Length: 461
Image 1 (spheres, rainbow, N blue to C red):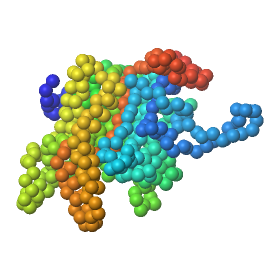
Image 2 (image 1 turned 180 degrees about the vertical axis):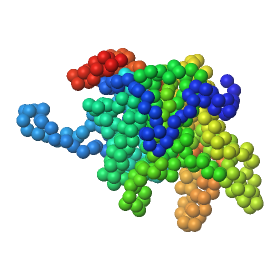
Image 3 (image 1 turned 60 degrees about the vertical axis):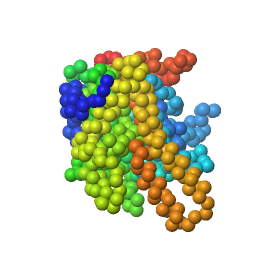
Image 4 (image 1 turned 90 degrees about the vertical axis):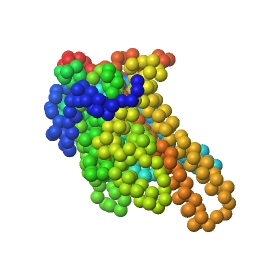
């Protein structure tokens, strides 16, 4: 389809969606009425591996199933969902590592993956969450896991309580409340810092210019929430305004959820609330840095910033003849990211001979892209580390000099090596048929209480 114009993309976004409402509290969001939220779960998935279940949450005492009199301890399930292995083509996610292999090992640098995602899909609503633990190591993964556990569990409780939210403003307030639980969970496990982005899709009582659904987002950190509009074939970022503009670069949040290293005071600086109405078949997705940063024209060696140019000028004076790249303003850099993303998804549609992407297809397209774009850098590093190992016994100074040269050379390859995660949901009413797998096994058995809630929803519709 050719290159996508950033200006045209921005114009199309404004035409379809208007302004995205953004602020620091739920009070900035209008109290748009919503329909009753149905409770039975049709799909739920988390990852990587066991995802939110990596670190068991506290146990609870309950009557024994054996005699009905004695008590026994059971580990509580996250959000009351016993089985999280139920992805749908309309609701799914994936997390991988883009880092290079450690020489002579099946493990990668940066293991374990510190991005944790979860999605719960119901017939007329969905909850999506993604956290990126800061830095490497088990503590980073535990921080992300604890944050998603805490927020998804609390959000599931308040959205389906005896007094559920009746409008968009209250939904955003519920998400904010869930962030307090996320903070508490991170604190309890003694973990460090993590980003967190949570989105809720719910049905509007009255359609707004053919958009029947509301997308509510709260984020801390630089995890992005985006929307792919299937009808027009464009992508835009909901959390764009959550980033801070400076003179030189577009900076992500400096605030994260958790405890800064060496600090006893928790923080949720820069918690941002966003709202925008969305349409049937739109795909809402949360993307970690390993996904979205690999659409950055600077990371792809397609452009440079003012700060990069200053560094390059100094390097050229020292004899480094790096190629000249076009200068990008902070706004231009972000616009180009979205244009590249749109080009990728349109090309994916063309290859698949479809004009409609499911959540599963979008996820596959993004994962394929980031793996492909970072392959050269990853292969270079793996070969270089093998060469260092073959060098035999060398001094610390010699090893340090070799490593410095390796990293300098690696920067000549496009892409950014990170943990990469995406969780996606296709907006729309999920029919009961979504409860069945290909082998016709029932995925979810609604309780009497759930059926009662659904009946009340039917009466209020």
